[in-house]
Every structure is written in structure tokens, then in C-alpha cells.
Image 1 (cartoon, rainbow, N blue to C red):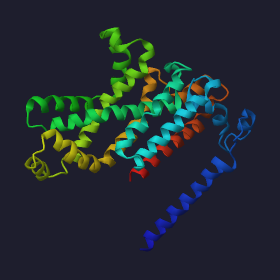
Image 2 (image 1 turned 45 degrees about the horizontal axis):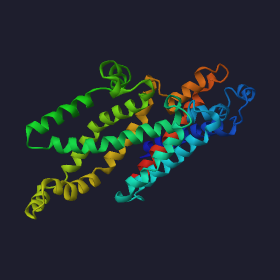
Image 3 (image 1 turned 90 degrees about the horizontal axis):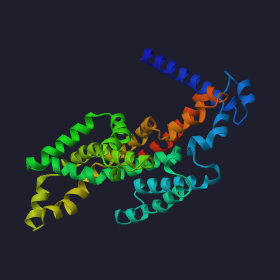
Image 4 (image 1 turned 30 degrees about the vertical axis):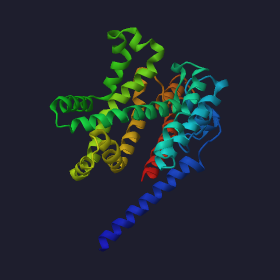
Length: 321
């Protein structure tokens, strides 16, 4: 008991010392104004948050024209409010889809001022993750139902699709969408280079559907066969049984897993940098890699975007709880 109490005391003491040092480095001795001279003077003693004050526009919104920055800001605010309202349950299923259509004119605001290859930062991360998960959900439901089908003609293709996509890394799928599809498919199907964002979103949706299918299948397995049999005895068709009886309960049971899938996809969107789409992480590299003066403050930049990721991921997990 005495030894355990001593170890606890030592652990608390070390944690307290580290916390004091971290606060001193991050707050008390830190530089917040965008002054390179002040950051150099505080080198080794405090953080240089001035790099965020200097580069915030490029980090958060990529190469979007500075004079039109209000457009991506508007889209980010609208998308964030819709996302948290949906996860928190403030938007009922019957009104969620019509309300979410608000993003269409908001996205048009951005597209009307700059092509998609200039989009970046947080709006691009939100767009890829939200549209990817939304497009993947209906396909994931069909795959989950198909995998449980008693017909091998239906279940086997679903199993092959799910297991194949889950076995491939997302990076290889993104390279396929960005560089291979334009070579092997007709131009009418893949479009020109300006449609890279659309191809990436669709590819991520197909990739994410394989993971969502397994999450939804887990929710389906929580229901007993008695409910389907009772619905059949009442004269409901198979599609009516799935839509009105089975799926509402299964989806509710697997909501934590679906939320976790979205959070994972939200973070994995950083991989789109390899195909020259500069989302939040890529925009940070874009902002600092070409600036010799501020390049040495990558640590503060990464801590800043880590805080942005934490706010969204922690907020979504708390709301979904």
C-alpha cells in the first residue's frame, strides 16, 4: 500500500511539473503576434503562435482568393452547425435531408468565385468527409443487407466487395481515382482535371461503404429473427419489413460505430494531399514549405491543426454519446 501510494505521488508530481512546463511554453512565454523577430527572441523558451496569426488564412482555407474569403468561412460555419445538429439529434430524420440541402447554395458560393483546385483547408476537409460518409451510407446499408442474404448470387458479390475494399489502403484507392481512371475510362465519365475533387469524393464514398457495411451488419445482428417473422405474419413485404422494422432499430444500435467511422474518415482525409488536394493538413504544408522565414515553426502549426481536429472529433463523440 505504501509503495503504491508513493508511485502515485511520484506520478502526480511528474504530471504536474510537465503541465506547468507545457503551460509556460504554450501560454506564458509564448508569442502570439505575427512578429518573426519576437518569435526568434523567444526561441527555446516559448511557442511561436505568431505563425498561426500570419498564416491562418492559408492554413484554414488553402489557396482560395483572399478577397473572397467570406465564402469558405460561410460554408464552414453552415457545415459545422449542420454536422453537430445532426449528430446531437436536433434534426429529426424527416427534416435532416431537406435542411442539409442548404450546403448546395453554400458550395455554389465557393465554386462561383474559384475553381475546386484552389479549395483547401477546413472547408475541403468537411466537404470530403461529410459527402463521402453521406454517399457511402445507402451503399453500406445495401451491402450489409446483401451480405446477410440467403442467396449466394447476392451475398457473394457483397462479401467480395467488402473484403476487397477493406484490404486495400486508402492511398492506393486515391491514386487509382486521380491518375488511373482518367486513362482507362472515357472522358465523359471521369471529366477533366478540374473534376478531381468529385472523383476523390466518390472514391472515398465507395471505400467507406465497405466499412459502414460491417458496422451496420453488426447492428442487424443485434435483432432477433422474431421481429422479421412477426412482420411477415402481419403481411409486410421484405422491403417494408426492412424499412419499417429492422433498419430503424439496427441503425440506432450501431450509431456509435457509425460516428466512429465518420471520425476516422474525417482524419483520413489528410491522405488526399498525395493527389494534390490540400485539405487542412496539406494546407499547413503549403503555407510553410515555401516560406523560409516561418518554415521552422512547423511544430506550432501542427499543434494548431491538431487542436482543430480535436475540437471536431471530441465534439462529435460527445454529442453522439
